[in-house]
Length: 315
Image 1 (cartoon, rainbow, N blue to C red):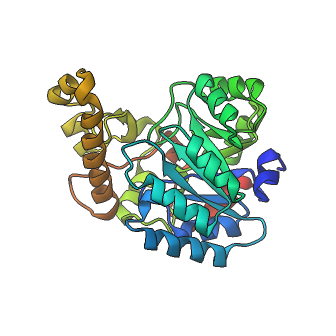
Image 2 (tube, rainbow, N blue to C red):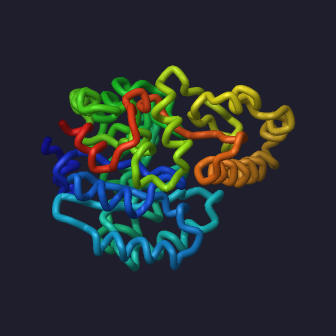
C-alpha cells in the first residue's frame, strides 16, 4: 500500500489515526505506530504546556520504524493556547501537524523551519488551493461522512476534485471503517486516509466504557447532526438524551448569530460550553451524554486493542 503519504511519513500503511478531542492519547498513538500507521492527538487534549511536552517526549521514546506521530492544532482565535502550543511542538519536535478551523500560514512557516510537515483540513477546493499556495505538505479532504465537524461533499466528489486540481497529496477523511473503504478512497485519487471513529472503541481510548460500547451498539443510521455542541454542525450518536434536547441552536443563539458584532463572541462562548459538554460525555457516565462519532462506527462490532483495529483496516 505504498503511496505518497507512506513515503512522506515513512509508514507502512497510508493511514492516519485521526485526532479526536479527549479520545486520542499517547497509548493509542503508540499502538497505532506499532501497527505501521501514523497517529495524531489534539494539542487541546492537554491542559498545560508541560503535559503537552511530556506527551511528545513519551511518543518520541515509543516511536518505531514504520510509525509516525503528530498533533492537531485549532488555528483560529477561539483557541487562545494556539501560539504557545505551536511553539512547544516546534521546540520539542514531531513528525507532522494537522491544522483545523483557520489559516495555517503561521503554522506552516514555523513548522517548516524545524522540518515538521503540515497537513491542513479542508472541505472545498477553494480552501485547498489556498493551503497549497501557503506551502502545506498535504490537504486533508474532510467529507460528509466524517465524524465530528464534517464537510458537505461526498468522499468521491471531494477527493476527485482535490486530487485533480492539487499538486500536493490528498488525504481523505471520513467514511472509512474497513479495508474496502480505504481501497475505494485510494481509487478516487487519495494518497491516504484519516480514520477516527473506529478507534473510539479501543482498549486504549481515554473515554468511558459506556462511550465505547455505544459505538458498538449503534450504527450508521444512528448518526445525526447537531448544532448544540460547538455552534458548528457536528455528528453525534442519536441517543435518547440527544433526541430529548434536540439538534438545533436555541432561539437566543440564532438571534445573536445574526448580529455581526456579537457573532464571534457567541461562537467562542458556545465553543467553550460545547467542549466542556464533550469532556463530560467522554469521561463521565451520566444521562446527559452527547457522544461524538461518525457513520463508520457501522463496522465497530466489539471493543478491541488499537493494534487489532489497525489489522482490521489493513487486511
